[in-house]
Length: 302
Image: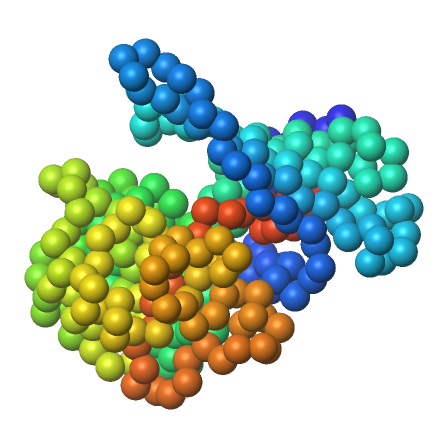
């Protein structure tokens, strides 16, 4: 069995290729059934969760068991280690059932998150999107911003409440070498000039989320929610066209969703309908399809 490290993952992946690999995944018939999280009881009434997300090649549909894979993501989150989680991906041969690769799930997840959000951007952001406002902090931002740059021709990125370390790593990304990176504390004013807004996470200075109830993006703006725990006003959610990763398990069932990425990738549903429409992408929790696809992609290239 091959053990694939984070460095090996970085060496074999490229943002545009990841985006197109995920687009193909959403058009495929890969089997990715839902699987519940398993509660892990800890001390003082607290509990953690072991998340298991399997997926496999649709052997019956392809009428062949001589090619393909079976895979599973294993993620463990414990309450006393909120900032530290562990994630592994194990890939099996679909022919002989032997394990063939154990992959760093944390780095795989970073590339998957970036690719999924860039894929959504390719359907939902205006073609002339160039000015991005980033609100909050997230260690995955450098990778995500590099992926954004493959979907649209970014010329300006403004950070609000993002750590100097993340901004420095973003500046070192080759894909952002010709992009102006700046900082602002005037979110209300900055949003007026934004073609796209990324809600990345809590403010680095306060550790809390900005009061996004005032968020009122201009016409035609695309809003990308990187942190699923962000709080948005009901008025905004009612006014924008909403999209997610998988409507079989949407992040908020009470909302009126327009389409998921599978419907967009297959051309069954439209994304942005007109230039001035405001769109919002909020991913769901199920990642079995995309993790499996990237794991197989990584295995074939290492």
